Length: 170
Image (cartoon, rainbow, N blue to C red; front, top):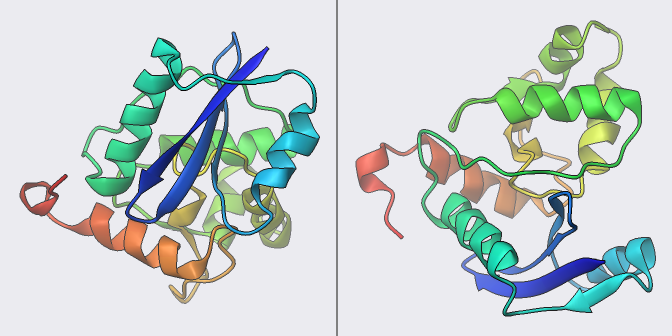
């Protein structure tokens, strides 16, 4: 069974879901985006706004959005992807708050320097917004683009993460 709930943040409403194995879906739900969640999990879902574990995860995610900390929150995750995607997401999960990486450098880190386009596709396939920080991936020239949840959100998240911790207010 997958339990889920919604939470309003300064960057929009998020849908957060968890299975018995851990957090499995975090999505900014604009337009039709939440339909991807319902298609993926179909009949195994339950809207549970009072689930304690889920609410604890939601609290940490909202904190990561609104006032990112130097030491990011840890989550138990249930991730579903190809071996390549899992490698990309694993490297992303190791990035520090405020740290960015280019698609090219990320491809090199996973041992496939010619796979920058595939890295971008793996970022686009990420179902754990903010938790697996694909917003920290930039073009080689530092440009912001291609963020599944919108480049405006990506810029705001990066700006918040790069502020001195004393200026991050929630």
